[in-house]
Length: 82
Image (cartoon, rainbow, N blue to C red; front, side, top):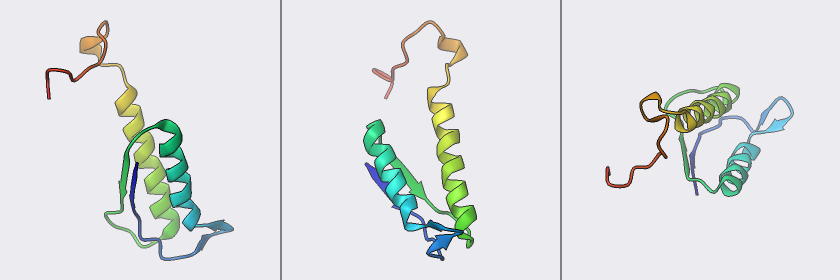
């Protein structure tokens, strides 16, 4: 599932159609079987908005898959915690 809220002021960044940004993230989330919420908080430059979206997802994924040193030998689970 994808929640995509980016306000891109231009139709292109160079030769890249900015509407393809949403199509990329839709395909990415479908193939990964994940839910992703992308929301623009600020910005007016289409290039920087798209760049920020990619960087924020990369940083979030890195944090999500990192091994917790305190639980290195355990299977990661939130069962019984939430």
